[in-house]
Length: 93
Image (cartoon, rainbow, N blue to C red):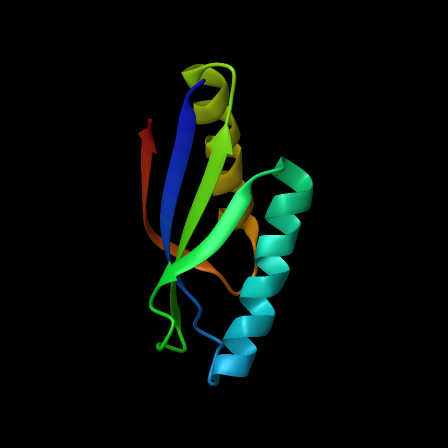
C-alpha cells in the first residue's frame, strides 16, 4: 500500500497576525480533510505570519491513485482565495 506525501509551501499575503493565519489555515485544512479524506498538518514556518508549510498524506491502493488525489489537492489549493502556492513536492513511500 503506497503512501503519498505532498509538502506545500504557502504564502498568505493577507495575514497580519498569527490569529489570521490560524483562521485561514484551519479552514483550508478542514476543507481538504472533508473533501479529499487526507491527513494534513502544518510542519514548518509556524512563527511566520504570511508563510506556512503543510504536509498532506494519503494512503492508497496504488501509486497512481495517490498521485491523482494529491494532484487534485494541489488544484484545489491553487483555487483558494488568499492562499498562494510557492512550491510543492510529491513523494511516495
